[in-house]
Image 1 (cartoon, rainbow, N blue to C red):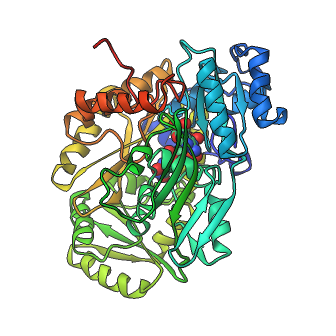
Image 2 (image 1 turned 120 degrees about the vertical axis):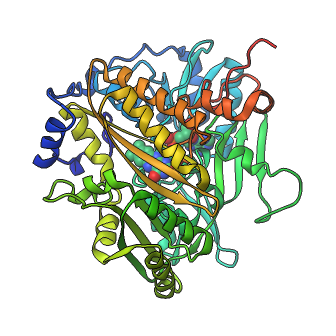
Length: 526
Ligand SMILES: Cc1cc2nc3c(=O)[nH]c(=O)nc-3n(C[C@H](O)[C@H](O)[C@H](O)COP(=O)(O)OP(=O)(O)OC[C@H]3O[C@@H](n4cnc5c(N)ncnc54)[C@H](O)[C@@H]3O)c2cc1C
């Protein structure tokens, strides 16, 4: 993973000339962005943890698994949001951990939490490092130091129950490896977020991730049947049946807890038989409102495709649903592009039935090409971000969800807020995940960098977040809370809800060492 950008450097993408022209003519981009400093030049705070404490950690995991090198610390600094990358490009490593610690078992994690609680060392669980909400930048103040608890050594498939279709994994398994391990047994998880190449199973559960095929396979939290969690107060072992009426489901307390309550050390996940057949296609609708009505009809009447995504007019024109083709001549066309994918049993029958709904609701069939192009480029878009940052444009995404009746208001409010904060940005949107009662809106924003681009984006993000809250949406559908959405999350919960969250934190993590500053608002004066 590129430390100052996204993904495999070998897959870096040059900006097509057509995109450069768009940046210049439409967005007024005139000067290139700040080039990334060399990795050796990133400025890190001195290692705060005293030698004996580092030795105590090494005693638990082995000295080869406690890293304090410049490179290891840089590579575990923050996540992969655009502000994260902009800061790293300028060499700002001020949030770096003092050390990176790699445990090899649940017991080692538990022991590390015990020592860190006693010594007041902040612990940041680190999966794939792809958080986009500040989920990996712990508050330092009041702590002897900060460690990144890299779960990369916990990378095994533990068992597969072919009868129940439940697979047990350690948390540090990256998504492609999980799919590879399952494919050998004819199975799939079906979780394909755009961060697929690097994110881990533990990170998906901790941040309530949602993949591009969520219409068919569900969100990641739907897949979690059981969890083992090491907390400073002991171990939680949750989930002994798919569903239960035995009181509140504490699995839900761990899902989305973003490392603030404990460290997930294993997960029991629902898996499916790998699909023998995959069919992807495109449809065009005249307007976003018409397309939304069609998507709603599918969500409410069925049959639901496995993948369902509707771009608005701007996203369709730019061709964002086919990232590999952006700038390769011609725009994405007029109207709104809908991508539908059908996988697994009865794919052809489901496609025929869903197509009847799409036709009845005004869709024009475009055949397989747009769907296959989307599938081919589904993980490419993040690579363009690095090139845009280098060219002097800021690109970032944000997302929300709401009920169908409120979705148009939410859509307008976010666009208006971004335009108000940024002048004339390019704002694209698609419906990314659908439910019977509502959907998620995923916005991609491109703007010319002005002044301090981090400060410029933070202003825009604050305006968009305020608009989401005001318009009655949730602050996040799948990116999570981190530090960035903490205040808006608190507003969603209300004061009693916040006090419950704080009480849980105090019970499981009395010394407050786990990901301080993330998710849980600090307890104020009573
Ligand atoms: C380019 C890009 C595209 C993305 N696309 C999507 C998308 O399509 N859908 C989506 O849902 N998200 C997406 N994300 C966001 C991100 O990938 C998800 O939030 C993902 O779940 C994070 O997984 P990770 O392994 O990288 O976790 P990390 O980023 O390492 O950690 C995320 C949070 O969980 C905590 N954590 C990690 N592992 C554990 C553990 N074992 N126990 C307890 N806490 C833990 C961390 O402390 C942190 O707070 C995208 C991000 C990027 C950069």
